[in-house]
Length: 338
Image 1 (cartoon, one colour):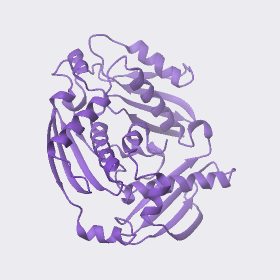
Image 2: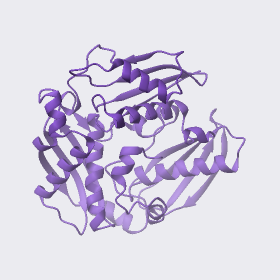
Image 3: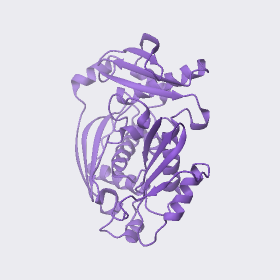
Image 4: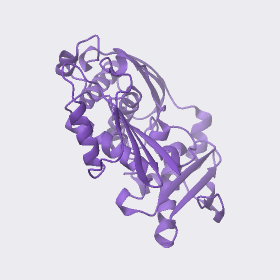
């Protein structure tokens, strides 16, 4: 049986957009833990557009928001020095960004439902857990793709806009695919060595680097970045259904974040209490303005293992997962479930 999953680094244009939104949310939460936030980001070249809704005691000016955006992109690694190495025709610099904001307050129709201890939207949300502590209870193909991608991003001997993909066949590595910018020097051997190191040193599978033969122009210069476009990366790769929307760009009252986290937590709890279960899937559904949820557990064949109705308020999930704290940029960087 084949399984394939992908990971992208923070330097990938879509993750740049995700990280900007999360970084901005952290700045609000530092000053007002009850901030309601839903801000989408698009970045193309030096142009950054923010659109969405924020209700908070904090009122940042457009100049302050622009400064936060530049700082977020600087933290990712798109610095003036990085641009100087690659050339302005090939990548961006945080100093050059032109930021436009279109942000209003949260809809009062949505607010009244959340204010009455209900979820901020209807939806279906999915979680899973694999009974393997060695992979942090995540699918092995996703875990390996993430491990390789984070290692290449952290050591930074090439560019920072990185995509990794791992295919397993019967739980053994069948193929590793890597896209990583290479400019004045070529690091093919170093990249392959690093990838094999992350896979335990195995040599019985191919490592394919930059399938087109060239990857120099990268980041938001080469590709427009938009929030919420890397859902398979953010969740479980090719191993599980994806429910709701993006977990990023949102505060803790949003079900796309809180109930996806709850589905993962419940799947982990099921594995803990059923040690003979190899993997489990948890589906949660809710409706706007109500704390009521339906929880259904299934095995890998889709057979129902357990189901029940429950009541959980957004503020309870915010406390459980510490979603009133400025930790969203860290979650975006390291992964939602790690």
